[in-house]
Length: 137
Image (cartoon, rainbow, N blue to C red; front, side):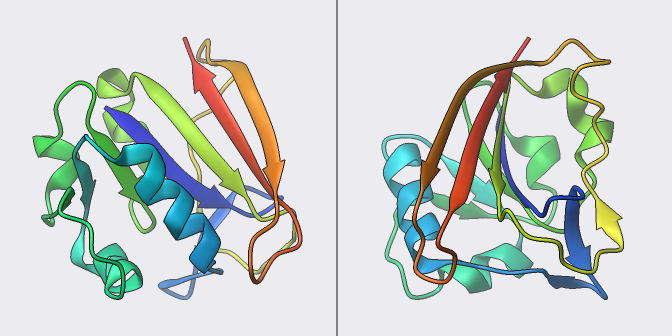
């Protein structure tokens, strides 16, 4: 599976059980990148995509258990390390800001052999710069 996660500069994902931020242009980029494949997420994340019409979104509370090789998984409120053995690729979207956080990305990338293979900066609607990083083993 290919995981997609939004992080702040400290690796934060959530604060007080809420996403730190969101951006409509980032959602559009995710939908474009995953077109033609399955995009798994739970109901918490699906609320963020409610206004977009995308036939490839699959909503399931146990999506990380059900995703197959090549499937995309958008993760917001689940620590991904328990699923690291199933992960083929990690796509991080960095907000380039510090937000309060209490759930953090928990895969030590370099220690576990993940290599940065691509990076790209783009402007969002609510963030002047969002950095996309792609990691593979």
